[in-house]
Length: 445
Image (tube, rainbow, N blue to C red; front, side, top):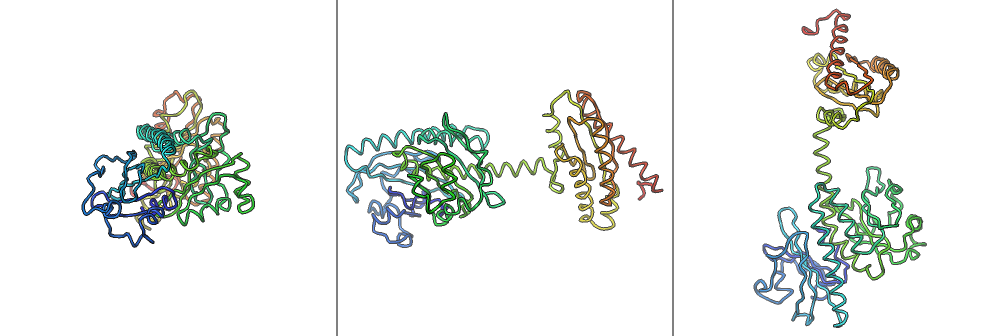
């Protein structure tokens, strides 16, 4: 959670975080520490929020903790006698590891005429953000939630484009989500695996808890030429980018391009606040992907399992020619008994690699302990027959053997169950002939 608080470190507003249960002060940003006379976070450690902020010995009578809900901001005005100022307060609650934390942002509106304008601006902006959160939480999937959040942020901030980038396994950055205003060209497809050196300066800032505000792209022409060229190509003249942290590490960032100058401050504040919900949605998405992978992917061979096969068949187009290849890894039990299950696993993997080699791009599934299946849609009969011969040759070269049953049908409407059953029969026939040729009874071997 430490990095979440650090999003607020350099904001112009007063920000503090407290534990809802015991009122312990968890964090105060630099503005707040300076205002209340603390030189470091250590100096405020162990103090209660009501002691520091209101000079009270007991919890404040005006405390609204019971009214706060995660994902929503409660806004109100209050005269703080310690500061001798009217403040616009924005309160919310976040939960992490079973603990709830109150976050309060206090805005000093300054002169009376500025107070009215700023209050209306924040009210309108936060109303749109709250509505975006409400609609987003109704969506069925985390990805849909993220898309809705980006859309509402883009419209609320008046930006041309709002996006999320995530670090990939190669160290580059992938644009994974994007919203664009009407008339603005999408860039998502052009921004996959962006070289790490392009955003290197940004990640250096992220590593010390800073975010990026570029008021004029020309300001970075000399000091960050790679990023300058990247942004210039996209016709970006200003932006706000906020890091996304997971377990203290920057795993990416999200931001808004070309917001109106008057919205730069709002954009910075709102993006930092919303980053918590963005990362929560990404975590939920990743969890669902992992669960789906476990449900539909065979963990040993990394091809589809029987559930994946059923889903694949259900979503197949009709009225197309297809071939079914039903294979059985021969000698698996003997290998397990003689050499151990690790050797048996290697035999299965090696056999599967042969299937991948020949039928790459088609439906591949492990439907039993030693049974593999390929579904080849839109493949002509002559090509299918050639693939079968290639498979048998590749198996010989790998030093493994599979019984193979293959069937091709001009029209898939003949019924998948019937075709798979026929391919299975032919596989057993091939298996029987193999054992006869070896002079062995497979039931006794």
